[in-house]
Image (cartoon, rainbow, N blue to C red):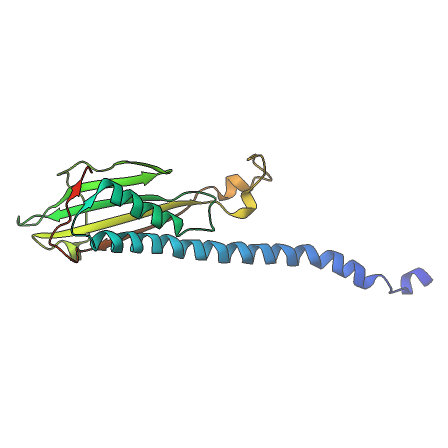
Length: 189
């Protein structure tokens, strides 16, 4: 009878039942805010790289690689995966209807640099930007986001979380026109 009426341990039992739920909610909230901030940074990378390229009257491959490194460093301290950055110069022809042709293209994928789209190949641009006899710079950024809950010291799959969260992709595409010249030629691209 005394055992049923004893209430001294009720708070400890309630605490033990509620704490796991509160911790899960805390970590989900923390991870969601980190993902939102990283997504914003991916957009900033595209914007900043496009802005830096369009300020140049001409570029060389080394300039593009330096600009891409600067863009990639914007994601610090998030460094679980590296962004892919593709810079494409697009010449819109005088034809009716105008065609969007690749003038040059350079990319950074997994920290390695190489050419991307073939010169004079047809590419797509939004209809509002397809103005005859104009030049555009398109920057595409892509990041395979890895939430912190999927990490393990040895890289092994834990609790199935890696499988559940390994397809989160954040990307952004940004278009700008040259600022100091009509076109931006690239040497070595």
